Image 1 (cartoon, one colour):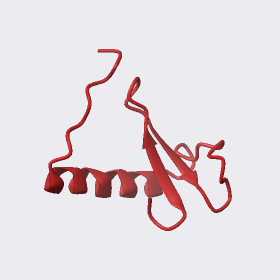
Image 2: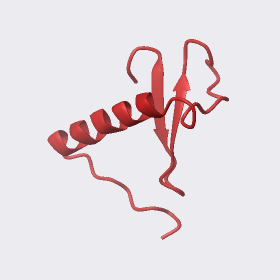
Image 3: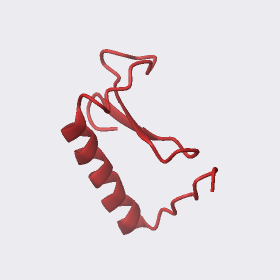
Image 4: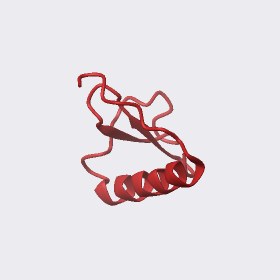
Length: 63
């Protein structure tokens, strides 16, 4: 999370969803298609954090 923004990676598809939790507390509206720059920024920050801290990426469940 960053401020009111939250990303969620779906393990079965590797798709990232983006939510604005200030406006959508129940996380029902995925904004990833309309807020592409914000999504890319948060995914990049997550990936940098994961690399720096040794977070392992789970394999795609469908694989």
